[in-house]
Length: 212
Length: 212
DNA sequence: GGAAAAACTTGACGACTGTCAAGGAATAGC
DNA sequence: GCTATTCCTTGACAGTCGTCAAGTTTTTCC
Image (cartoon, rainbow over all chains, first blue to last red; front, top):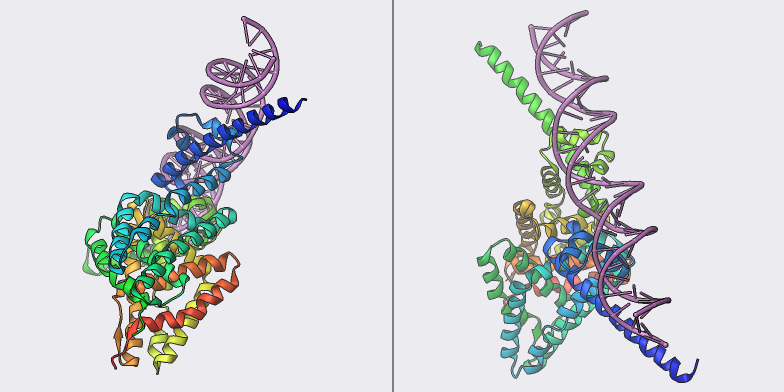
């Protein structure tokens, strides 16, 4: 084969791979939405296919098996959800502004992306029973922790103080609040959500100590 | 029917009800263990029956349907898990002792009853998708909140201070720590669990403010 | 001990599951 | 425009699921 022909071959192969990956991603997104709607326990391949424009057989053309598909869907969740607060951090001019916009964003995504978030917790929980997704889950959990740490760290900086607890502790606290708010939001318990919202700024305040 | 006969009938009926309930509970406990082992998504009625000494058909003799059975199993979880720290509170003579014994118990049940706890989180999560268990879940969650509140409240009392946050906030924080420790415990990540354990006393300390 | 009631087993049903092979439709390369 | 490859659909498979009816075993009551 000449060099030109070889390079051409490469280009074609690459384009095919790109196309293949694009379709994979497309199907993973459809999977993500189906999972968000039904939950892990009740999501079938046929149901996923119905939420896409293809038939159920195509899933085995693009994915090894169901695990492979769902793992890819989890990865899509990460793309969507793990840089959420970065713009808030970037534009904050004062500690107060950062805190308030963080709280606002926190409850905005809670309500707007509720089904997506419940899926995340569902999959994180599945990983307690099944080691398949565990690596992906631990990775995303780490990214979530880093994300809230950037917020609190910057908040402390703007206040001229330092975080009062480790990244781990701060993450599990905020995540715990989020989970509970989500449960009550989906239960139609608006006043409990409102109460959590009212308490969140104070909780954030407790996470930073300012030297006197 | 004479009065005597009627009372006798009552006694018989009551005994039958007791027997009926006893068997129901027995089957609910078997269900609980199966769920703890396999998780909600993969637990079938035949599997449950195999973990009991009966055949799968009997489950429909004692329970309306699968939901009814699982709801009863959740209730059994409550019986087991919701008064765990009360003895610790009762015997504590000092704040330090209460804190240390709480931390010890926290990680003891984490490791000893890990499968049961992962089930709890699994079911709490199911209630985000399916309203069936929601009432039971919210009720148990409330009891768990009250349980940790008793601990922190007593701790503050012994220290001569007051809790620094609401019962809600304190619960979600401790629950968040527990969930994360559970994830890493089941992932075989012992050093992360150890780190959380080392940080827990400090976190508890932050939950109480002492007037100076 | 015999009849009635309760407790339990067995086997079957229709529906649904993940997987995959066979074949049709679309596209790419010449 | 023809061929080869890629893409996608269809239908079937073996298995599992919750449910339930029919029948057997055990217990209860007189």
